[in-house]
Amino acid sequence: MSRVEINEVAPRDGLQIESVFVSTEDKVRLINALSVTGVKRIEASSFTSPKAIPNLRDASEVISMIDRHAGVLITALVPNEKGCERALLCGVDEINMVMSASLSHSKVNLRMTPEQSLEQLQRIVRMIKGTGVFCNASISTVFGCPFEGFLPENQVLSIIERLLDVGVDGITLCDTTGMANPAQVKHLCQTILGKWPEVPFTLHFHNTRGMGLANALAAWEAGIVRFDGALGGVGGCPYAPGATGNVCTEDLVHMFEQMGVNTGVDLDALLMVSKTLPVILEHDVPGQVVKAGKADRRYAMPDR
Image 1 (cartoon, helix red, strand yellow):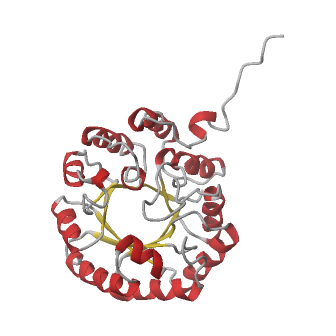
Image 2 (cartoon, helix red, strand yellow):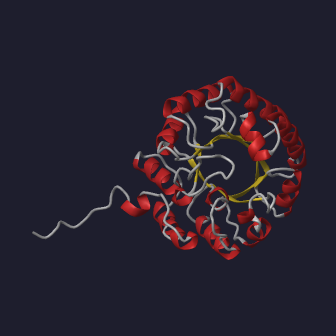
Image 3 (cartoon, rainbow, N blue to C red):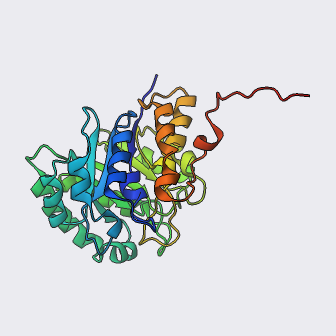
């Protein structure tokens, strides 16, 4: 049986855009519950400015309070050197840096050009090297920018090459506003795996236009085995117009498991955690399997 790795990003990507602040205690309970479901990584928070993302202003407290489980890596997103210092002090297993493939989104989201982002990422990589912490770089708008449209493939490939030259350990390709389509995804994934077969690439899809699972399937068919998902399908980028929730983790796991692909995740346990989200967030969430049940669910025949 083939196998994929599932990373959970709801505690960071999912909560950053919520209109109501989720308490530190609720975040800790959520991460602790996710930690025993079998997901490979949990992106627990972001060490960004509280003014920029007030919902994640308790990053240090959350990561210091959560239970740590063998085999479950705790990741934190960092936007700059200061954020990296804070994350390293908390003992994270992986640091996720971020840059954009498009100039316009980079200026809006990070207030710098992609070239300036690369220079900053190089400084952050130097801080991480020697610590034993995995160094990952996420590239936003790989499959399309809400301001510029679809980007030339060579533009994306050039950024990947420069990130690898800088010394990152892994790269995440992000469909920031759900513009990707399966044919586009499959072609790009085949290209990058053909050029860099040993690099651990992760795919991060949003379900803005309902193609998140189809895009994940296309990436898997091309050879990708690492995927981000957000519990309940929550999330979105506050600096990307039109961005809605991520591909739903439990729906993603359900799809792969129904296909006979091993995710290492206990889907029943994951669904139990997902059922708590509407209470925590005070609204319904987009996930489908938690509402419909797994495909093997059976019903009693109606009385006649």
